[in-house]
Image 1: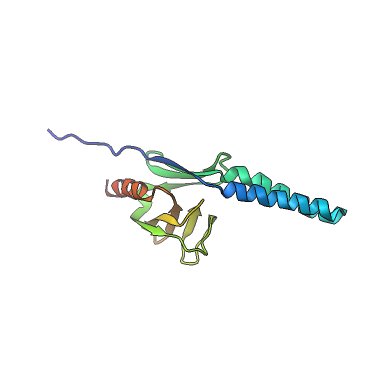
Image 2 (image 1 turned 180 degrees about the horizontal axis):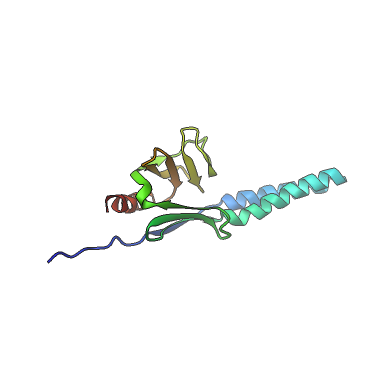
Amino acid sequence: MTTATATPGYSHTQQAPLCLILYGSALVCFVVAFIIGEKPGIYIGGGVGLLIALLGPTLHHLTVEDQGDGLAIHFGPIPLFRRTVRYADIGTVEIGRTLLLDGWGIHYSIRGGWVWNLWGRTCVVVHFKNGGTLRIGTDDAEMLAEFLRGKVQA
């Protein structure tokens, strides 16, 4: 008798102080606007500060979780930025490191492919069957890579 074992789901949330840097930058913008004291400076400094302060709650943490047929990646607690990767589209997976130039956030890497990173340089590099690349920054790279390899082989 053969028993099939299902791959257990994966869910991990990485916390990081990036949001504190954003809040601090917003505070600096508000202080500069107050010091300038004239309308154009207040509007520009206050507007930039407000925009940065509103961006902060979207970057408190990065959650990566299994959703059955794909991997959901989203920043939060306000899920303004999110992406789903279908397991069927993944070719290979490896543990890697982002470049210092890659930094944090969501952007296209100078090495090619997208980077979704909240903090640190450790990442899981997902190579898609169509030739694209996605680097998912995480403090749980070994477990995420192992989980994805299990899904790719299944």
